[in-house]
Length: 162
Image 1 (cartoon, one colour):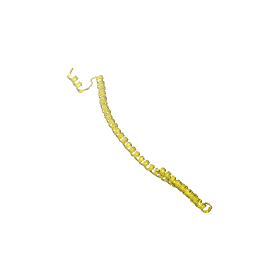
Image 2 (image 1 turned 120 degrees about the horizontal axis):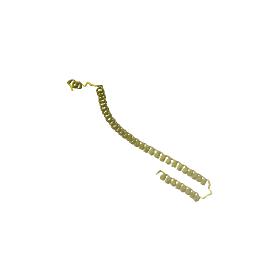
Image 3 (image 1 turned 45 degrees about the horizontal axis):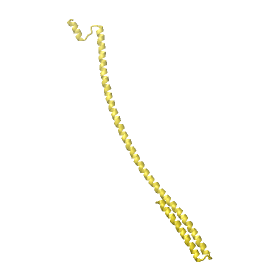
Image 4 (image 1 turned 90 degrees about the horizontal axis):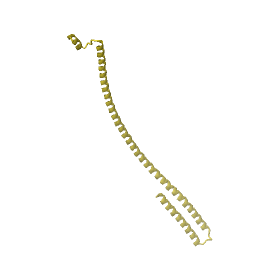
């Protein structure tokens, strides 16, 4: 080999078409390898970014889950408080209505007995043919019946209300 040949090879100038084609192919392969390395780095960077995004989404999902659980707990507590209030109000109202109904029934029953008692007293006063002892006996019996009915009504009222 001569110095000129060595010089040509050192300059990188291809001697033949085959050498030029080989140099071209090797250059293209080198470019493809550089692009492959860049693509590999980009894929690895994207994978890291995706992993970071997944972690952030998982953290956000957990935060959202905790917020939903807290909101559900508050809603449950508010619902329980509301139901207690409504139940207390309904029970009180129902108790008051029952008491008033019992009172009105007792008044009606007692007023009927009082009317009957007044009639019997009026009739006994008109009937002068009955002896004095008999009238008082009838009056005492009517009063006792009225007292027994009033007592029974009171006991029923106390048992229902208490």
